[in-house]
Image (cartoon, rainbow, N blue to C red):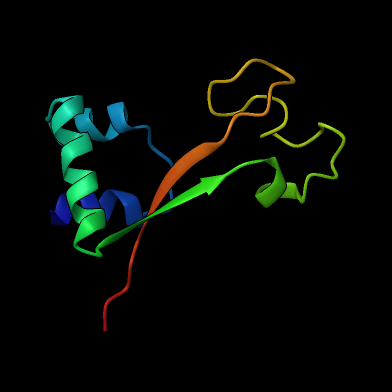
Length: 88
């Protein structure tokens, strides 16, 4: 668990496949782990789309509107990220 949290906390962005490879896990196991940690309140899902990233007023000039996250240029694709929830 600490290895996953350390990767997510370092500020880099990783796909599920990249996290799985870094932790020597299958992609399916990584998805299960992430989902469980979210249920337990250790992780929070953050979905960025054009509206949340640039307010939707960028006239398709921001990275998300240009298809970041694996989309086709000009197709608005949301990007799902995870952040560690700080517990007091």
